[in-house]
Image 1 (cartoon, rainbow, N blue to C red):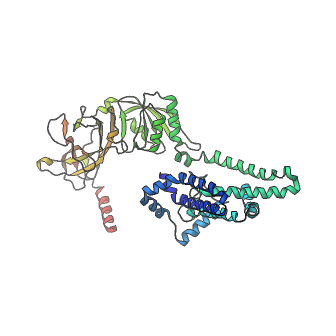
Image 2: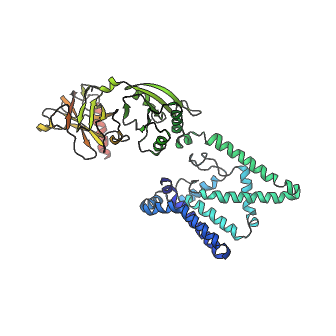
Length: 494
């Protein structure tokens, strides 16, 4: 459906033109009406998903036109210039659609195409057929001329048919001219030579250059698929598999999950959290996006590299497959028993919080979270800074750092043997008084849901847990002038 939303405006123009052409044929010749009707029914069936999408999402369909439209004279002239260059000089730079910059026609196919334009009126059965072909070419290229990112080959995909017909007309013209020189049997040879050379050039460009182009390698998810193929060949069925950085609902993960069955597949964004089960697991990391993944995972597990994938001319791996044996003593954390919130989520402090800290600093708080039961909604964690008296005694909240728990791998997906490791940050104000404070944490339903009460180990019905006391010192005096200067500049800008 996303592709339909992206190309519907060009597809609609081609569909409308095809229906006009079918109606024309049906009206001109009664003998063709039955075939025309059948062709129209087939066209309707093929177009049904497109019409259904527009019917169900009319706002998105119209918005897409507004987003990409180019209606200024200067913009249209620029697009025409780009399309003029696209035929023989420089084509679409989008690697997904084409070898970046490769023109539509190489010199050999270009000879056939130019000769075809000249000879087309003489090759068709009736002259008006040339006009219909010219109309198809015009309406195929029109959406790209009137939209951004010209020359956009996907929006002008209808040009494939006119180009093939015109090139065929050029081959016919050469064959007719060569009959006088070579005779009937040998006259097709010059056209065949041109077609063969053009085919070899296209094969070379697309097979050796385009298919190995780094941008296409990423866009077509080849790195992910190669990692999945390695897992399918080499990893036992009972092993847990995690892909990162991905969201759990990414369509690539949905396809790979089916392909790797019966293995259990999960996915998370490693920049936001880590998922570490209590058992041996395999991780696929897209190293090009997250070169630090192995280092972060190695804090909590013994990591071994099983496979790496590289692309020619690239020094670093594009993907890596790791085997990770969890260090359960590291996951036990400072609060070994953990704190249960609402008998739903257990929370542990995995690393001691540095103390003292200075005003203006940011305190990292690394927590481990586990599901105590099946969860059916997302949750967030708040990290607060309190002092005596506490908030329930009327004391102030000095600062806070709230964050959704692992948005790419939300609680409803958690398994009972997994620890979700996430770093939360607590900014310390510059003007906070020097002294001793305490960091408290709690869990609540995202986005504005109620807080979960502590249900273990304490029986007190408090909805926050005191993690650790910290001492806060005055801000670094060498740091203060820079901060004040930056604040002054921001005020002047505002």
